Image 1 (cartoon, rainbow, N blue to C red):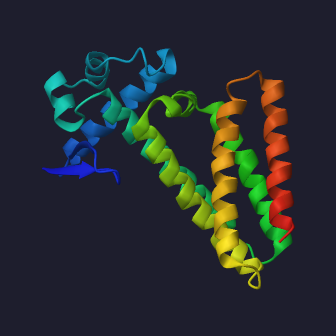
Image 2 (image 1 turned 60 degrees about the vertical axis):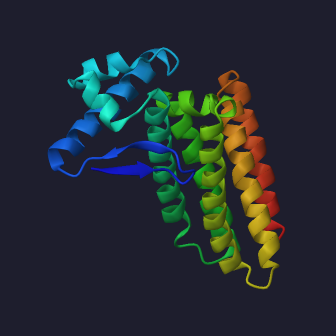
Length: 208
């Protein structure tokens, strides 16, 4: 059984090599997600995760050394899904109008995911208090910025590539911060904040 590490070098769990073990780990993550949805990550206990997943506490610790490892694994999973969504959304862009329309649509989709997914809201609301999650967040913003920059450079090949990469990273970082802020206030104010961010981001992209 091989130890899996995230890119910060922190062991998250042990990799199950057999299908049965993989299914067991998936049950653990599903159980943790359900508990976070019901009471938040602060209230989640390892014993409850094991009980709901139908595994022994020893089996749980075999794959996840602590609660933080579960949360980081879930965070990485959401990030991977988000990157796939961004990559797919920008893949067919071939002019500036298409980029603006596609990226504007992605902002709306991403905000909708934040609103609909309580586990994602819970994890990212605690990002600033957890260095490991902050590191994951930063890496994710860089990766997402690279996806935006690639599409941006494709439709504006004469523009400064380094400047586009820097701006794309900033736009993605501000987007993450905007989403966290939007879900921490009432819905009407949150909607307005996201709309303002969207207008600023698209204006910057279109000014290239």
